[in-house]
Image 1: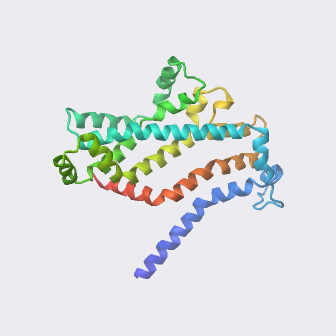
Image 2: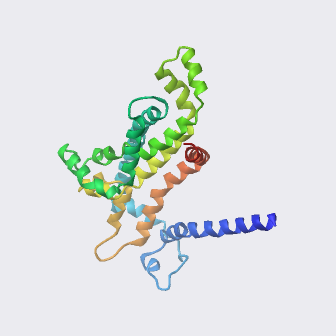
Image 3: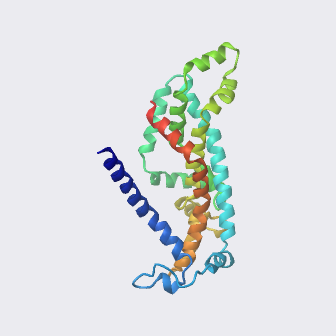
Length: 272
């Protein structure tokens, strides 16, 4: 019975993995087709000739390299500022005692229930008032704080035994020393998780960049790919080629840090 149960579980997971992978496989195959092959009815699964010129054409016909550079800058700065702001906030909510701590944290958590679209108009007005429209700063600024990432780190900080902190205090360590030399090394896997999630969100940002930017040279990849969608038709092979190139960095990052990502999510979800 145990063997049958394990076999059924593995078969189910394999089938689900195939269904999840199918859109990515189709995207990859479409990226090396001609436009006629991509629009053929019934659909042609495999191209007659691999058209790798679709990948070179997107750099020649569109400012794709500029989109890539903008996305890298936006992602790196968003992740750095998120870690600088979110990590001390999470530590304060987890380890320090101050008045109305739990009330303030619950109010911040309640803000997660408000749909993100509700913030678009006030955020736009703030960015406009600061004179930051059509800049990369306008894309980065609203995303540098996240209560969700604060919650993840807070849960991890709370899982650290108090004995370690008390021993450090007895040895004469200051609060800053405890934070930087004791706490941060322990929560390093969760910091990697926050960096991956924050980087993924910044890398895939679409709606907000289109709202605050009207110049193509300030757009990230996700928003920039819309240039392949024309008024009278869409060049699907070039669109898929751009999509393939846009997801490769995130796949590599996740493949490298997947163990830390999964372990920190488990710790954060299981500790209150």
